[in-house]
Length: 387
Image (tube, rainbow, N blue to C red; front, side, top):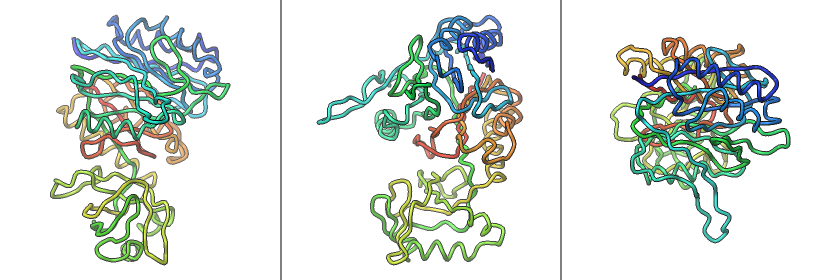
């Protein structure tokens, strides 16, 4: 039996009933196969009693590794429910593969704080991670994993919904945790990561010639701000109009390629500029020798990029539809970016041949670029599961 995935969506307002409804729908889609792994995303009134919603999911779905979180909105089966009450359940029968759940926390030892609770990584092929934004250092964990398990993709996001009391809501098996991070390590399960950063490159590639920390002093031998102004001045009118709403910088992570494409850049914001020194402050560490290119973000480029990335993954499967997909979309996308509801959910459904897909709107998305996983913003990050 191949990997099988089912999803369920409920808009019932009673937490127990909503969890049971969504869990039973996901179980029905598995057609009798046991759920080895489930993701649960809860939003709106369901976060008044996440324990009851979790109980309902388990009653409707059965045992197996389960992780999940509170969300500002959920998506499933071509639908997106932003700022609504809903439960989305994504469940998979892994065909002999395994999912090892964990709850990671930051130790409270001031002298030597450390991340605790991670399982052994020796046999892991991928990790799926959901983190609390206030109590867990996601960037630090991703840096640690890049050293401990180089090349292992990490897919996930930052929880965007909290309980009615204001606490965190991370789900792990039968428990609700208020902080840390929950996730699973996948063993003997194929996962194709897809990161659509929703930004289009403009202008030429240039090299950082002087930098320190997250400050770029020089680009192409000139003060960084002067170089950026020159590039913008040479853009076509349509591209300059997009720059007017905000310019981003894309940094090549893997410099081993001869030619760089849209997905090869880690896109970050420009946090500040000093007209006197010509320095730029960017949202990540940089160093001399890195290749960068300006990027702009709009609904059209975000749509194009998501479709292109998904088609590449469909091509990698010889055109076959995958078993399903886990979708983490930025809470700045949706209607705020596209004007209409259901954009990312519908595009995933169209481009992946109707494969079952569910997920949530995150306060930050986790996915790999250039062989290393990063925390992003405004992306659609998708884990594609072949059959």
